[in-house]
Image (tube, rainbow, N blue to C red; front, side, top):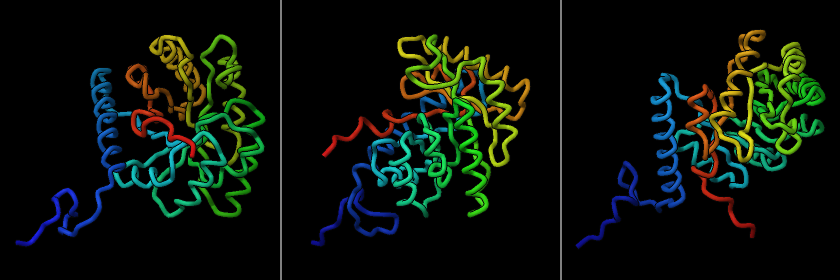
Length: 255
């Protein structure tokens, strides 16, 4: 009697291959999050689903490769040292990198080498640094314009703890980004304040976004919502969701 491998260990052609348990876990978690997104979009009376940006910080490049194989096209990182290393390792992979963390101006030159967008532009100095870095990179490689989202603080302390520009600073910052060659003012980004009701926070962000669009009609992006509050973000018009732990699990232990 001839032994046969378990069906789960075969590909479409019937060849035996080891089962990647991590990919199976990611597939299941990703499907669950996509179901939540679809349900929340329907509940909000929307037709268009927000773009899912899977936040891969602290997780290895191998997980990004697995996610792309599962249909993910956009990933988010918040530390340049980690992001630049992954982007270099996966340079042949068809994936867009979004920088979502607080960014020092002196890191702009590195970030523009791989980032499709920077979602944490919160001050004039950073906008100027990104414009200069993009101009240099476009001359060298012909990279496309950089999508820039203004990170808005929804906290009463002016964003001292979680980053972001005060709402009354948006006008000047938006003008600086829009007037810079190589930068595209894509919209706004925010994180719901700790302890605050996310619906109230994202309703405020929706008003801020509407005010921005009145003067900058192309700045339609609203990056809001994470694992714990994506439904509230979708209800109030998020176009981009930044989901990490509900797909990738907790941060891997340091070895």
